[in-house]
Length: 330
Image 1: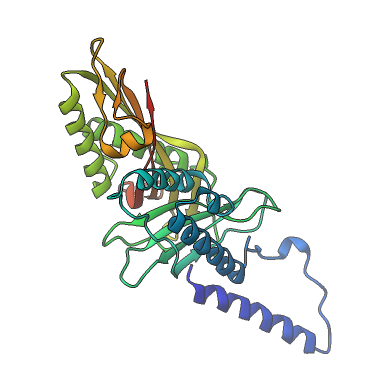
Image 2 (image 1 turned 30 degrees about the vertical axis):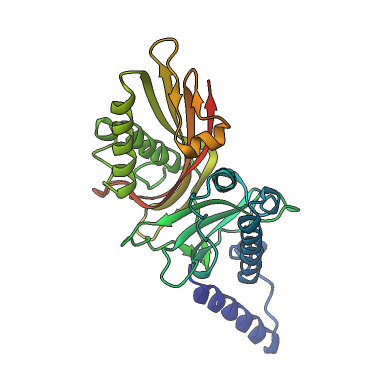
């Protein structure tokens, strides 16, 4: 939700408390069960979390220092950034990491509850930059909130309006399919299957086409064709366990954020075939070739709009970011 809506909700509560204090007859306190939901973090806390995250990213990016990230970055966001640091250290032409923290365009904070806790925010790192959808998680009461996932909003996309109760974002458990065309976990599995199988996936027809799907499946087809004479080629995209976060939307659907892990495996068709590695993979592998094949791993953060049950809408990607994680040389 927007920062303005968060602030207005807080002002309304303060005004109500002030009015009750001036009344001649003090009303009986409401039963605890009538109290509205309490957000997991306040607007001020969100600001401080993002300030700390921005400082950690700036320090880490400037020095290519993994230690600078440890307290504020975790999960796929940490894995892909560390891989990027390693590549940049050994490849002068490697791309700079994308800036993530900036003006907040939207934030959605679920109700306070058991750990791990989390919230999402959409930021515009610089003027005119493509907005980023961030998920920050807190493992326990003494732990800081850490960036766990970041995804770039697709050009021209519109995020669905989120469902709120007293200014707090309503969530759905990963396995909860109530009112949805698919549970958050199943939606991520369906999209992963589409990335793996392309048009041959049983979920392809129910999934809207998008730039990520086109890019990934085209790259896989081209790679398979290029190596088929010498290597068996296998690819698989799978949802990461414990990396699914879902917010209910006003249309009865859900906005689901998750991480898809992918492996691309190259297995020589005959002894003596060596795989020449591209420069970024050679840097990560610490050698220019793979004598017995390799497995390349990537992580893709995605945000999907899951339609409500009974809708004729398709599963739709609204944000995504894909990054290299590593390579295992056989």
